[in-house]
Length: 456
Image 1 (cartoon, rainbow, N blue to C red):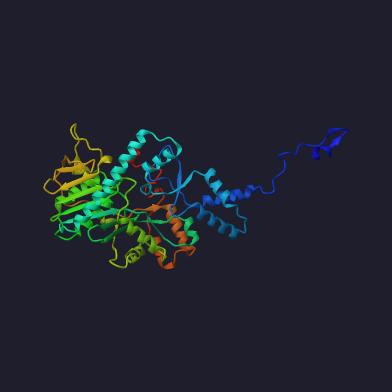
Image 2: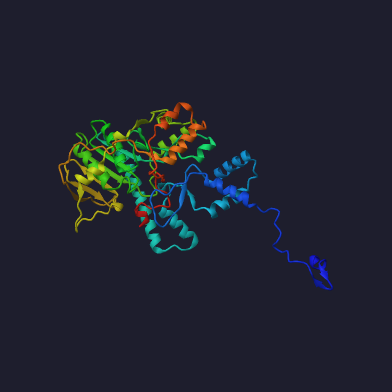
């Protein structure tokens, strides 16, 4: 009204409409918004572990989160003498302008429990969901009771050895708190931890992504080395692990364990039992947490330094570290493909994602025993051998595996800017690389499916 009264002639409004035309004093300029976008784009992003046609989501490393990214953004603004936006605006741009997520390993979250809790809170819970959830909780309890019972028995039986094994989060190298590290791709170091439930001994088998992948053959090779190092009086071994179908619960692992028990002189029986998906916490977690704590106290520039960090992670009874090279890994997929075939028929059907317990016995070289429920009796299935089961397993790799050209470039950049000391530059110069190798998550994300029964 004030504006209209002061812009009239002969009783008529003669001004112009100005509503929505003025720029609010607190409006963020397009230039500042673009600076935020460029900062978010500067972090290395990779596709998921599993290739999915219906998703183009990319992932940032597990060492990042919005808070840490915003802190790094403020550091960048200070260097460029730029006024930073508020954290709420940074988060808004990240969520609305990008299809990016932070990597959360699938094993760290239970899909069944998460879906149940979400449905319970929003009132969409069905009787079928309740039934599946109750069965899930029952299987979890049974698996834990089984493990505790086996653990106690092993302490009183010299011929029985019980252990758990797990492949924890990737150990990224180099590792330090220098801010430039967050903007660069790093070398992946894998650590298969095996923990004896009998006496508390821990063994860690380490290799880099240039020496091997994270598949069943690599894990089976580590288990073979562990079993060979057991005391000669051990005749029965019980293994506990998560139920990942891509690594532990499959025909390759079954072929490897059957092959080992057939040719080993001392061990007569191997049991492999699987913990309930989403609830695979076990004694190996103590190894992982000790390593995580130890690495905060030291800077790591090359993979070999992880040996010292892991060894020092536990002062009393230090963990035993076994570094592996590409020439150490055996190709158990070749054993499964060329020497062992699991036959199915109308009477016995094997659904690998439902198996809870596998047993291999020296006196039954052509048979695999399995259970779909830990409380059930064993079901036997015959193994067909196409050729004679040779004792020698072929090597999986003939040479080191290349990293992506982009990763090699980032690592060399860290060398040039001094983030990696000069003493270690030669190691990174000698890393094999290839433009055809693509970076992906080294392990499945919580949003991805690997065929686990929790998704069925």
